[in-house]
Image (tube, rainbow, N blue to C red; front, side, top):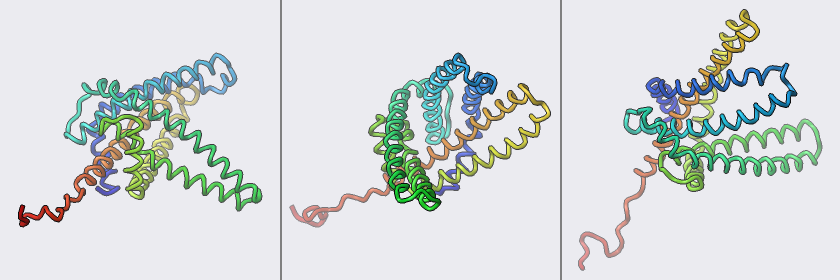
Length: 272
């Protein structure tokens, strides 16, 4: 499976999973509408609003993990069997909840460590002189490191769902698959990222034209709903594309395993 084939499959299969997109759309609309008062500049610095914002963000994050597990299980069924039902959505969400949560917590710990390392490297480079050249070098180092790390961490969550394994084991397996297929995985990530940016920019432009005459709260509500639609559709496309590609990579590896070699005494013509 090539990169563009995975992208095409992402869009094709998502068109058959619109009920799943609607689940995320409803979730994102609720988040967007609840967040409107919190993002109002007039409420900046309000302790009550800040407290509500923190609590609601935590709750949304915990619910999102459940939705993510349910969605990934449903997508896996669609790709592997050609059919999927939301009847299993809740079961998948519950089944993978704590493993996905554990993986995300590992990611947080890794991010803290990586940030510290990059900060030390950046500080070391800047000790050579704080100028355009050293700042550019720091930017290049951070960009390359970030791109590489993101690429290596794409697959562990798919490993949890596809192979039904724990967080730590999935982290190892996902990194191994990404490392062995780094160029292809990075290419797929970049293509999907560019497509999502183009779609977001185009829809955002036309939405802006519509909401400018509305102005005020009505315009913000329309913009929030449109953004919720985009943020519900594109992630499912990306999920399907990466799930398809991951399944292809592990199946390809399995089919490419070498046949056991016959030993000196294992020849069919050898005498006992």
